[in-house]
Length: 107
Image (tube, rainbow, N blue to C red):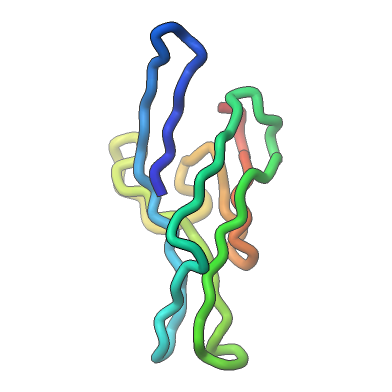
């Protein structure tokens, strides 16, 4: 996923960063996202704890082998490589079970 920030200035200033969403699955069939891409606009005054996107993946396995978990992998966020973790220093977090992404600190 690529996160873009655009301010309201004239001309508008922008910035972006890449965030990988990791789908953990430990068996024979690989999971895949249910859609090719997601696009969402997040206003800069979004209230803390507001959820703004739910990503979804599926696994062709059956039963517990089809269960997935979601996490972020953010290389070089703040100049440091972070291990996949919802506490990666990002202003948002992903629910490991549902794939719902919410703002956790003011932007």
